[in-house]
Image (cartoon, each protein chain N blue to C red):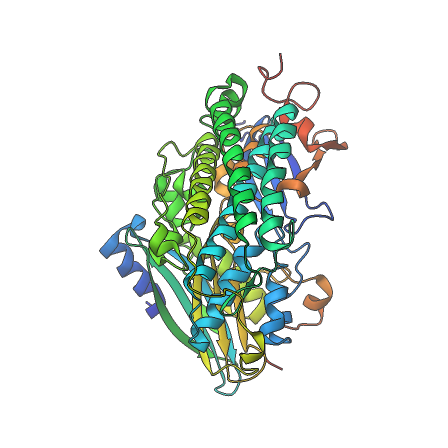
Length: 116
Length: 406
């Protein structure tokens, strides 16, 4: 099993489903390093402390396992990052272009937040 | 010989939305109904994506303060506050106490008018138009107060790096205290109306029940989560600005239905009024809260900041990344409606079409885009555009809850 999935599965085992929520996933295109960095900002409950899981994936082949079956709260963030940065979340069947960006951008195959 | 019968329910596809051009968060709810009961809802977005994150990358850090204020009209103060605090973290700047108190005052006034707005919209959605008018009339008091404080009735542009854009005179502070005191009485009255009115109770109680477990696992935030027993409030956990000294009370209810979410908002509005009066009584005089902008560096040092604020709709987060240049390398905004609306499609299932607007309004989605609905009857193929309020009112050709307005 991939690391990102096992991290969240361990988190559920340790703290329970009500022990944390995923606040946001931040994707940054680091062109110079040839990677896309993904930060999973997670808030632990009840102390409401934010922790971050950081990972990088290659820019040429931006694929990472989806976690929406484990943490449904990641749904909106995964869809957004796919649409704006072109990251493929393996296992997320709801991924589609045009979730946010208009049709002409989709047709031109541009990912707006990729660095030129 | 037939040995199996498969029943296919006659379903009606009801696209709700997507937009009214005046709205900043147009969204389409595609609801599938079996008779009166909603069986599935798809949330479609992207009707008005303005590419603000990209725009922020193309403008300087300081111009961006005015751009982020335009992400949302209703809660522009919290957007600028959370962005400015991210810049302050990167720069290592700390505003003085008076500035931090004034920031809290602006944000609490904003919370009051936002909560009044959505409660008024809820009254309108269930057909209680008089109550809508009354709440909106009293909401003008907050708008006036916000104008006295910031200079703008809606768009405040009040925050700046290291402080606020204008100071508050003693005379104006007294005026504000008078306005807020008179407003507090009205808030208490409206809270009582929502508690005791039979019609409101019939339409909201036990509608759109959200379990605590679902609220957490789907990352639902703000009054939506607090109405389901989740004790989260960035004001208390992050203690930003003057909240470390003011210590606001967190309102939590356990019912989890639409009514609980609206009641959380009334209680929070009352607490915000209390907090605003406390700020005005104990406003520190340690400095001039308006910093000299010319002293700020044009380029920011390389670094990253992640800040949270408790917006009226819940936790709002900003991630700002600087590579040492004039413009930010990346700004990521996550608004509370982003998760509250997109992740909550499961909440409508099992309720009737007439409940759909009620549940949606209880999530505080900036509702004005939802004023019309297109109803398609798959059996006859007929399509008809009807006003959204008619859908919620029930009765007539398009069904609804029979006991309402009878």
